[in-house]
Image 1 (cartoon, rainbow, N blue to C red):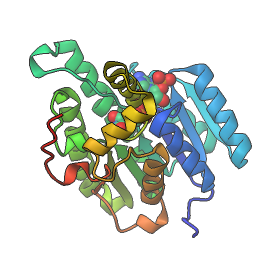
Image 2 (spheres, helix red, strand yellow):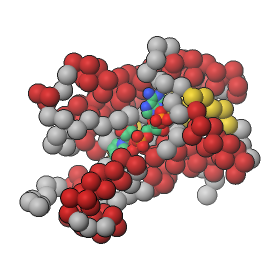
Image 3 (cartoon, rainbow, N blue to C red):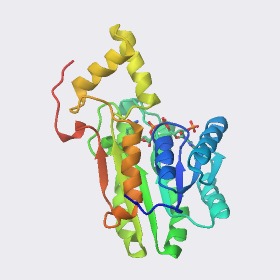
Image 4 (spheres, rainbow, N blue to C red):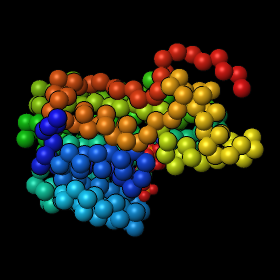
Length: 268
Ligand SMILES: NC(=O)c1ccc[n+]([C@@H]2O[C@H](COP(=O)([O-])OP(=O)(O)OC[C@H]3O[C@@H](n4cnc5c(N)ncnc54)[C@H](OP(=O)(O)O)[C@@H]3O)[C@@H](O)[C@H]2O)c1
């Protein structure tokens, strides 16, 4: 199926690993040119070169901390200098915070809101005037199930992702008349380094090997009985970025293997 993505230019923030990396590969496989960034210069350079070789597509990359003042704006500017246009913005950068409310210090609130929300706001502010001028654009925000269904012990990221979802919905209405569609994906339990670390800890505590701990954890907590893969999230993002999703805006596509569909009284 032709998704209509050939020759489009896509920005993916935080593409050196995990979901952002899979999204970058997924878009490049459909023929988009890419602008990608992360803080780690060796990682983002390696990924950009691999994508460019594998898909014969142009890749602009930068090692950049998007929390630094002016970084988001200047990344969008350098993308424009390289490609002269911008069709798709994927706001993927984000982080979790496992702490109860009373333990979260002021600067931790600042950080969790900055990394999950303000970076996306800044990238949108820089990209929207360009998209408006072109009369077309696609923005996909990587939120989380926990922004819809709060996760115990994660109040900081719950609140930040809920705000990102509201940004998605509010902005979608505002920019729809200009041909710009804004959607979010809300993943949970997708196997990335963060989950690998958590499972290693559980395995150490329980004395199980990694694969057994992962299988048991998934059976206990995820209705479909397994973790999701970054590529499954990437497929959803590619669809939302494509011409096949032109009538979809302001939506949050949940990718959680059924976790958010009901309560689980799993007590161990
Ligand atoms: N995995 C899940 O199950 C899950 C569930 C719900 C939501 N999510 C959301 O999905 C997104 C990706 O998650 P992930 O698990 O793939 O995360 P991850 O493995 O921690 O990857 C985050 C990416 O963002 C980059 N990054 C982090 N801080 C940055 C900064 N200040 N400036 C520029 N780049 C930065 C990282 O590269 P560097 O370290 O090189 O900068 C990396 O490429 C996040 O928004 C997360 O909240 C994931």
